[in-house]
Image 1 (tube, rainbow, N blue to C red):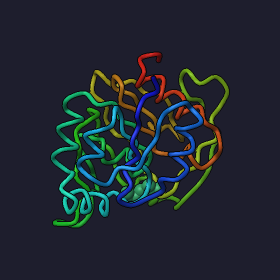
Image 2: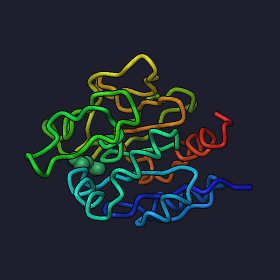
Image 3: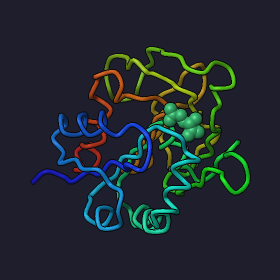
Length: 197
Ligand code: GLN
């Protein structure tokens, strides 16, 4: 039986994630409602704007249910804004009252728009632990990771900064693999969900 993987579809780029997940053999669907969240085995949080997504998570009454599912061990993968939200601590989180909120799924401190202060967007071929040849990584106003806890594996760096991590069955990348047609990161995540990686 294939795993049911949701893509949080409140804001941001969902279509490419759905395609990449289906190519990796998952049954992929969008998640906007509580019933959809309750029905999935794992969740992808896409790129977009972490402050807007935080606001919409509250509006749609998904914030606490999502935190609860993550605390309960639901596997998740976050790309860019999704990486920011999966953190336990967010630096430069945004203006008070509209800030990005941590979902506490990976023990790490993430700085929002960290690369964005230097250069808005860039691409780089980076080594990614366990994926063989380099991954072509697209960074768009991307975060980086400034601290990881002992349970977190660092999978990739760019310019010396941590840009991909894994803690148990939860994965995060500062870049957007869904934009390049390289399906290896999604395939890794689906293997993590099914217990094969
Ligand atoms: N800068 C965005 C944020 O703070 C992330 C950008 C992206 O997802 N491409 O959420």
